[in-house]
Image 1 (cartoon, helix red, strand yellow):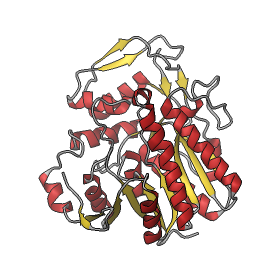
Image 2: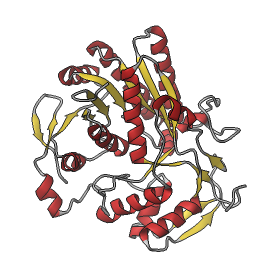
Image 3: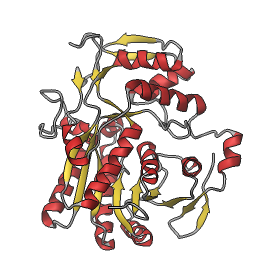
Length: 370
């Protein structure tokens, strides 16, 4: 099935994974449309995407909670599928503010599904998480491992999966692809788009990059007495571009056949915390100061995916190495020490008028560039 002129809606598409998936869809011949309220992203990414693709970026500004608005967007752009990214994702914050997470993550999905039903679009790829597995008994983790989420964030992901499963059972016309991510890291090789967390990063790679660029003094390595080769925890790190290409493979699979699926997206290999740190030192050419700290509650020794099902069902596998991930993360951080908040003058000159936002009221405006 050709992707030419097929339009795919990306809810939360201006975020870290969404923006890279925009690029992957564009490269594959699809027409991606972003729907984002920019509560956890920056409009400047739109001009970066316009520059990279050489095309005007289509973006609708609004909330996924507004069902009528989402339905209008799907109809207006004649979307054949939706990729649903628009969810909050900080585990610690979810413990402190569970209602915020249940309202946005679960309520947002219900709203999007109702909008899709109204608009006659019944193919959805859902951004889930490996956190639904909790603390598994064995690695590598297959899709058949029992789910035992340990945070409100993880619970919202599993609840959303249950909703999608129930919807599919009620009406076989629905095509549902559930993607359980492991640890997305890296950035686009251009250095123009990447991960831009607010405040202190929750994840290892952006913290390491901020130490390398001087924004943080040192990295705390939590635990050096795990039963692993170097004593530090092992995780499955996945280049965000590989992850984005996994979404393209999932959309193609849904549109080509009526089968629904749940698959892990990872590399199938683990890298320790010290392994990531040393890879980043190689990429950046500078030492990363660190010190060991006590283990954190809930952390496990090893956590990585069995990815054989993704290869079988989606004809997808990760191609990029931990060195690629660190190289691209470093390029992004060097080029954008303050993330999207301050764009270089030469970027503004090139990008300023290349994208438009459609507001909830239907008016249009140039996308903000800083």
